[in-house]
Image (tube, rainbow, N blue to C red; front, side):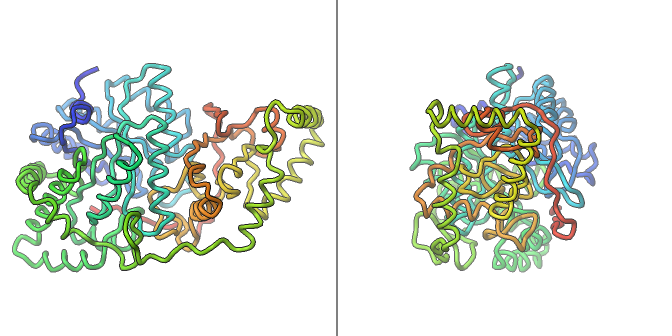
Length: 500
């Protein structure tokens, strides 16, 4: 395996810079490779991060672009997303990356694609688990990055991002990269959370060279997970009236963010929004010059909503309302008949295994049982008869009701508790968080939930549970069944745009 400057820098604790290369369909590959060649000789740049499905648009093959960039001297970091790939295809992709002597991979769920109903056979936590399994069991050389979004301004969105990050690290991630944002208090919040929980993994902070066009789109939540305050949009609009159309101001803001990250103890900066090597070089050098002033600069970088949740300070954000009678009833009632309440190896468990085994050998009875389960669970939880029921691990909220069918926490695209794909609908993970907090069970949300065995769709979850057929916490099945995603109504899809 050749040298990996990114891994070497992070392991040695040297502040480093990674530049994002957006391999979109409209980007000519020859231009991207020219950019890679220039970045390869830019001091301080240790890798180029090659995107995949940025903003929900299928781009060029990141493996091909990354391989060509590597041939031009730039260490690639390949974005591996779960969009429209089942676990067999993801496994094959990771083998290909390793065979090409590329070590750096960035595990992402991915944005919901525009104009199609995609496959999300795994989420990012499950993908990291797969990567780590390949690393440990098959010897693949992988250095795994994951994303975290500290720039969330409601309690469920914010806290769940940190809980999910802990799950990613527990699954085998080596370091994290933040989503973009322009709020130093949130950068500080993430650092404090990691310190308070004894997590010593390196984190790169996102530094985006923000132009007016991108700022205007992001102020509307496009692409998902990106948000820019109206005050910053107006500031950038005023800056564009300068002779250089605001270029100097954009670069200065980026350099100040690099200085802030240095001062806060981040491991490096993940620079996006520009492919120009001369811009990147200037930002790196200026960021070093400004580093002694980082505290003063941090006090000036504060663009957030008026009612914003911060974990470590008094907040004007609305407090979570107490659970209603229905939610309290669900928490109380559904805990009773859950198969998880029957201890394995006990008399009741052995009896249940015998009874459900007997039913399983009688297809008509097994089908009737599955229909009875569905009749009860569908109106209560939105059950879609996946055959791998994990609602006891999700506060009795069905993951199949998530358009991406995520099982380990919300994606980065939530917007103040609203779903990325269906904006008029609340994200299901808000309800999961609220119920867990009300029951004093937030720690339970750190439990890893494996991807389902989709070959069990339409079968009885009770039979599958007691006969140990299903995929669930503590008993994962990482096979490669054909995925069957839940349908999303065409009129409910949201269109997203990628800032250029």
